[in-house]
Length: 277
Image (cartoon, rainbow, N blue to C red; front, side, top):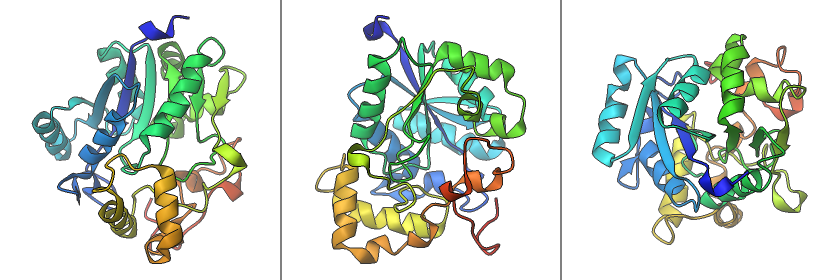
């Protein structure tokens, strides 16, 4: 396969309607909305060609589209709850050969991690239909990169039936290894930080953590790395402590009875005080 000719479309799912932290996509971060700052970090990748912010047709998400226009970002508006359809339609509209899924709750995404996973996919494009760095996870939560061929995404879009598969876009791939050739990129050195560090955003504590990381690192290097963040947290345990109680919390916890490739030790439960969905 001539990978140099492949059109890579990165779909960043974005919405206003978070149940745990409403409007988190527009929270201010170093003078820009949070999802815009994430897009800037994604643009620092050596490979990403077309980045599309995929939001819903809900009225509340009109502001996402308006912000995209102001920030010169491409925007697609689609189904509110069928994220598999939203990714497929966005990729189709922008003529993707390869599709990267990236949620907009990863404002600390490391461009070098994107490049590492994408390089692996491109080097083995004839061998894999789907490559990620989170099945099994080893990177700090919030460095999610999932890559699939357009043909594989089309197959999943046509065949996935369970609400969980439609809502979370990619479970149909890794829950059906007999249908797809699946690859994974683990963190170097055999490290597994997936349950130790939390660089994603769902709760107000996550936002305060991300703000503190930006305050410490952004002016030094806007494309600061995973290693930079970990070094900072080793030096500043006060920053690490801001959202440490949520490390390991992810959406798997609600679907352990459905997921055959995920075990209970790959997620963390929360008290009802925090766990709204």
